[in-house]
Length: 265
Ligand code: GLP
Image (tube, rainbow, N blue to C red; front, side):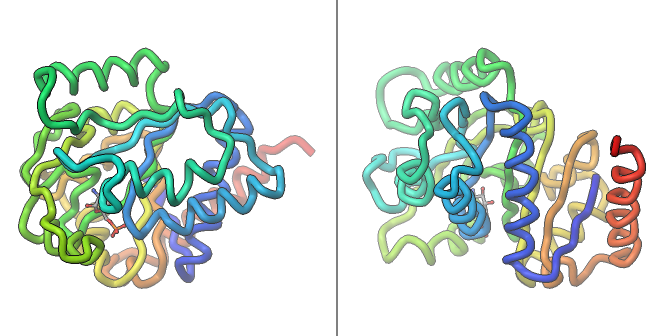
């Protein structure tokens, strides 16, 4: 895994956008797994900004969102669908038919069947080119809470008290659903590349466990240690507890140098 430590959130956003932009340039019909939360909001804002400058085109892009609360209407301001349209989709030229969310409506077909269909849709699109992720304070990715199977696929998860408390802040007093549908760890691991973003001191412990801790279902993000193409982009505060911070910085600097050495002039 490549650990990229930036001096602040703004720089983290720039770094993430650079990688997303170069993927879309190389593959205009790329398949992206998209997250919600406060961490990626700056990334969406910057993507809109460069879209308005005509530096990026989303017309061929296909997206699959990571997770959604069970039973929350799409029009509810707390739903992840609402967040995605407000924060990003409504502002760029992505095609509505290329946007996908995990099944979350109550009633209708068997939920396990619907989750399998979501997995099939991802496979049918050729698989995820890039999974963009945030991380919970307890080490969750998507809504894969501690003790989630490291081989899990899209399914319903029960949220922990701490996740409910953390997310409650955004819920303006409404009762928060304690069930969510999330891509599984194996779904994320099947992505051809992963960008994990973390900002702020409250993520420092989860970041340390993810990078330097043993692989464990108790901190689901640790599974990313087994992924061959992961970039962990964090700011100084989120990097606070890392024991080899200066080494990670050196590796990153040398990686850029090597890239330069092997780029045709
Ligand atoms: C939420 C989402 C995750 C997200 C995490 C952190 O519960 N399910 O996908 O990464 O919490 O959110 P934030 O970026 O707001 O800290």
